[in-house]
Image 1 (tube, one colour):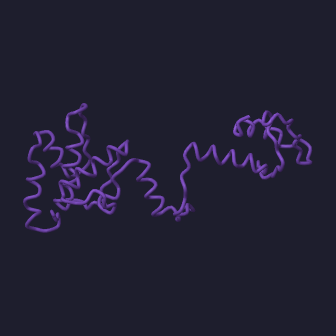
Image 2: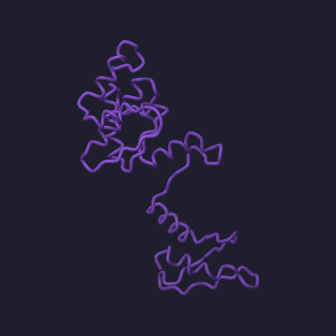
Image 3: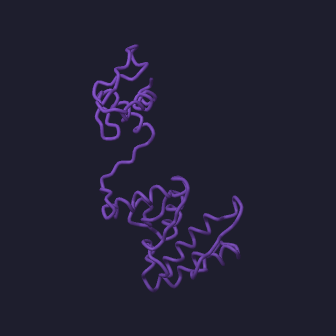
Length: 192
């Protein structure tokens, strides 16, 4: 296994990591100071250049895997990048401690929130709901016949158009009741 921190192997690592790259790719990989923009068309070797650059930064001790943020758009691209960098450095791509901040925008943000979210009031055990989860929760709330809107709890609510039953009139007992809009809001969510 390649150890980027071992002095003997580290001397040979940079030359091995630029072998097979064209002149522009090599220049991008060997640029280790300051910002760098890689702009190229499809199929031109951008991913190869980026993965070699990441491996080069690690092998030359310019950065550790914990200092590199590599964001991609898709899980497939993130997996491919992780596998390529791991192959170049002799690491296990399934080891989540290797390149912990390589992934999609969403996966990296979730990792950061699980790690440090408690400092802003987000518990580590938070759950992310997709559209299906959200719809199921709204329907479950409708079926439980207890809905809380604007701090007022309404029980035994039957939305218009469900089961052929007429809706019950909602009234919280105060003049200008804030619940009259409830039927419109809940009606659509409950499938009415």
